[in-house]
Length: 424
Image (tube, rainbow, N blue to C red; front, side, top):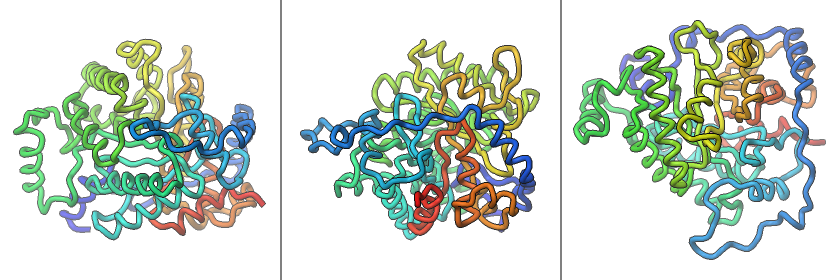
């Protein structure tokens, strides 16, 4: 990989792989450890949804122009699953705000900034919507805003064709990284010139508010990125707006300054929630919730909820978090990293106690867990026919996780991954 292509990858995706990660994956859990983990956590398993009468949930006639629901709703998400193909009983999950979501959601992280890739994502998202997935995840900086635009086009097409209604879908995106427009710059100098013209000269942010080459939580920056995401997606309301890897700031500021940044960011997001631009917000992280409290980039979920209450009261809109969970990265379930009630508990236990939705990213480790899993893992999920399906089901089986996200750039991958929850 050339220096320029490494720069392009860093600027067009959410978080570049470190050198160590690009060479090797973390070790897999042993079969015995996986069995113990699933057995221990099954004591806190979710109750499945009770069936609703189809007569109450069939799609109603389209409302008059301007009256359509503009965000996911309780009735809408139940309506979606009332007509969806039958799948394993744990495929439908309860989510904050009394929503019903699919255990599998489609992600849009990887890929080149090309028209062909846009077409593949657009087709995959449409296929996912019509096949039983109602969770869609993207970010403003994924593929230079092209992933958001492809998602928006796919959702528009699905609604226009009568395949879905807007209130049946949970559409999520993220802000925090400077999102390029269409294609990466040709050089580092070109990138700096773009930052100057796009953010610094118009006064959106000061240069010192952009850390580590492209990350900011400044309210004016986040407002700019949120408006951009609404336009890209063609939505009136985004269901979940995540602050993207907020722990990135902790490599540049101290804890006190970080708390101020988060408070100001949450205050903006509460304002935008009240205005109807977003239905809720949260944090999408890579390191923050997986590392111990002494780690420089550690995030404490209870503290984030406390900040949300400070600025939004008891009716605050902090709804969900996103973090990687997979066979090689089980920290959320295994390690006691979160202070809660005078002791340390695993992240999933803390999120459950605090009423926060959990969306798991990287369940297949960008394809590295899609093959050559040990026989012990295959024995645990005999209904699955591929290792990718087994990796998805492992993460999904951990109580406290609502949805697992998998990047899917082909309709064939959509069908293969959904088959992990097939019923005979």
